[in-house]
Image 1 (cartoon, rainbow, N blue to C red):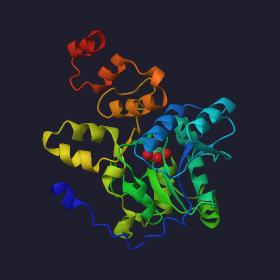
Image 2 (cartoon, rainbow, N blue to C red):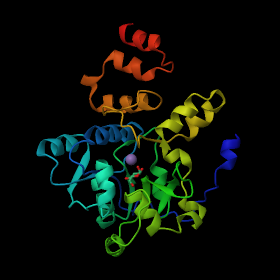
Image 3 (cartoon, rainbow, N blue to C red):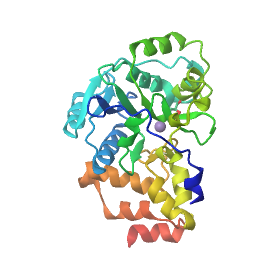
Image 4 (cartoon, helix red, strand yellow):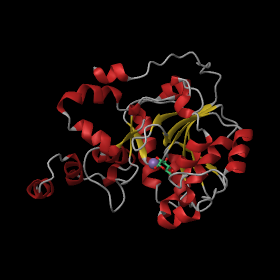
Length: 289
Ligand code: GLC
Ligand code: MN
């Protein structure tokens, strides 16, 4: 209960008429096709929780026709965008994955939409999050690493050509503390922490996987977790990639992914990802049971 009391109270004083508003969930596929499983799992998870809001994926030219067709069959509208290069070459050198993250800013250019819930392709939803469209721009959840900054993996934005231009103009002179879009956006919207509380999403709208895992293992937080965990974010280890962690929320990700690819679901994988005890004996038992 204490957890609930700590949440900022949120009043929908900024509600727009939902029927008149053109809105969409938007994600990006802009580092080749490496995040394709992520987009598929995200789409399934949104669908599984009953959203009727359209889904748009911004893709760069390197995404193949076959992938576009597959995503479009899964209900995604495909829009091609030009990549936006990371203006911090040193970071890209250290962290290849950050080379195209700035392409995400192109969402501000999608001006035929009034409001966007912009989601990283490495998140899944655990509940319906359509209420986010009632939030003002810019809304985001605190980042767990530095809670006075926001995490850019889940953001509510209002597209604006003028704002996009201002960002592009500022790109090369604006420091980014992490060398990615998040560091840039936190400098650009440096007043986020001091904005009205309606701009600050409860932490459950962007829970890092390791936090989810911690909460899952905490006996007295189960009810709060079920109620408040809305989005899991696999920021560091992607469940579908080689260095993935198998524990905690990875099971949730695979559930969403198997929704898109039932043919890939295998019983041992399910048991493996559901495991809480990671001693060697348990790991072996999960496979050969
Ligand atoms: C964090 C954010 C992600 C962003 C990246 C680079 O991982 O969650 O959205 O792209 O930082 O800044
Ligand atoms: Mn991410």
